[in-house]
Every structure is written in C-alpha cells, then in structure tokens.
Length: 171
Figure 1: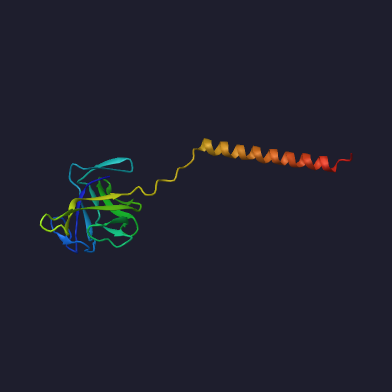
Figure 2: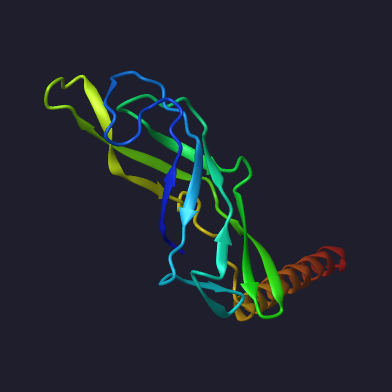
C-alpha cells in the first residue's frame, strides 16, 4: 500500500520553512489523502480510493531528532497499528494495518542565503524492513527433521543396549 499524505509540523520545520541547525523535530499528525484512482487490496478484494478511509496516524521516533540529522528508528501510533475502514455494499469494513518498527529518514536542503538553516525536502521516507519475517519451515522439512532425529535416537539406543550386553556377558 502506498500513497501521498501531509502532516502537521508543530515546530515549524515543514517544507519551505527554513529552521536553524539543531532545531528539535516534533511530529504532528499524518493525514493520508486517498484519491479516486488509488486501489486498495484487503482480504483478497479490491477497493477504489473513494471507498477507503485510513485514519490519522503519528510517528513516534525512539530517540530525539534534530535538524538536519533527523533519522532513526520509529514506530507508528506507538503500537504500530493504523486503523481504517472501507465502505462496502454490505456496510463498513473496519481494519488495522500492522506496521513494524522501521527506519525513518528525513532529507534536508540547506538555505542558499544561510547554509546553517535547512528546510525539509519534499519527501519523507519510512523503510519498514528492519525485521525480516521469520521463515516458516515447510511441512516436508519438518517431517525430514523429525524422522532424522528419530533415526539418530534409535541408533544411539541400540548402541547403548549393545554395549551393555557385551559388558554384562561372561567371558
């Protein structure tokens, strides 16, 4: 899922507003704009942009961010869940999008008049692939593992019994 959105910038560091180096970065609310040409796939069905509503969300970085070095780990809505809804013929479908912790990168452009002042480039990049999904083994692999372990255990048991018989038998 991808799209275009906007956000409040309570500290005044939004694009086209130059702020001094070292200014703290505060995030406000991000508002997603879904246009009619957008397509959303949920639950194996496709919906157009006029049917979908994605609620406002916030960005919560784990460390303080400052101009122009703003970048680090962040999570959305403090729990990684973004709620939304889709209007269908059968009523409203509520959903939540689970977004893992990711890397937040902000691009800054220095002022031509005063290079110690920066403005936010017209992009906010959030990369949510820090934690690759845990691979789930195929059933065939699990079966091979179990039969292999059973074979090793039965061989060890056989050898143990065989060595006890040899020690206890009279010579």
